[in-house]
Length: 98
Image (cartoon, rainbow, N blue to C red; front, side):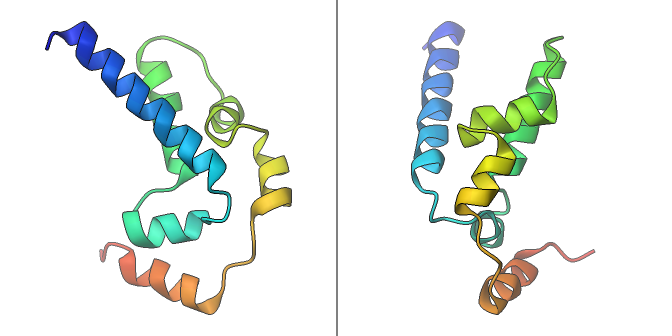
């Protein structure tokens, strides 16, 4: 596999991950953080950082809209639920210790 093929495959996998997260609005960011150590916000930040590394200006809001498929505030209003005590406990348990 050459670099162009690898990059194409990585991009396809990224697009599929983003589409999956957009479809699974029932999965809250706190659940992702507790289980995987990253969430949609992390993914959007990584996207923005990658853009900056390539000299492309991208705001946090624009990167979040790419990942969420809509403005972040709209997603929160439509899909974000208050964290339950169990979700908060799982999040805290998964956090790295200093």
